[in-house]
Length: 321
Image (cartoon, rainbow, N blue to C red; front, side, top):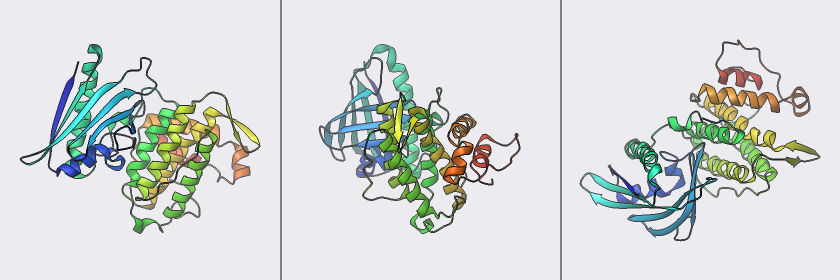
């Protein structure tokens, strides 16, 4: 069974092709994170929502005109490969993008159509404004785990980073003694360590703006942990850590530093209470009194129990809201 969706975008064919193939463009409307090896035989991986990861092989590429994907769902109980064909044609008023998703089981077609309808509405907004904005489908996963939470908080962080330019790198942040640029270095160092704990090596981004540099590293870190899973322990220097605790650090890093970056640059953090409350629970497991003393964490700042979950998380990490 197959479904079809079309969108008329007020952009050139080359820009439309970039919107559907380039990770920095895909993050504006489709995916929390994306990896794309844009060639016939190359692999792609899209984290569409914190709980849904599409992955497969690119079978055909005609730049500016057409791309064909062998499309499947990562960690699906019933692995399958559908075919997704996206064609691009000049049209009056811009460029017509047509998607055909073929090979669908009949019982899944309705849900897949709902998904593509949602994302094509966001594609149209991104083509007009440059960014469709935070996706409500990424805001509050139905099942919160250290890994789905990592994806949800990464989406929050990336939205903040889009509002930061190179001119902001010297701006002080609430994170003690760090400018925006120094906080980037700190966060990339943390992601390097967390990727190593999961058994892989982080490949640094070669170019791009602040959001792209951090997004690329964060995608690698989260993907490595999703492949590894949360079982057992990991070796952190002389200590063994439960894998669940190590993976939980991702969410705390993403959400707390999203707040740091936002506060430094006059932005607001958009995060659901469900996710912020969950990350607060993770932080309470990770930042023990012993760790505060040994690692130099500031003491928790007193705050009203009526404060938002995000404000309580920020206060717990020693920052004044």
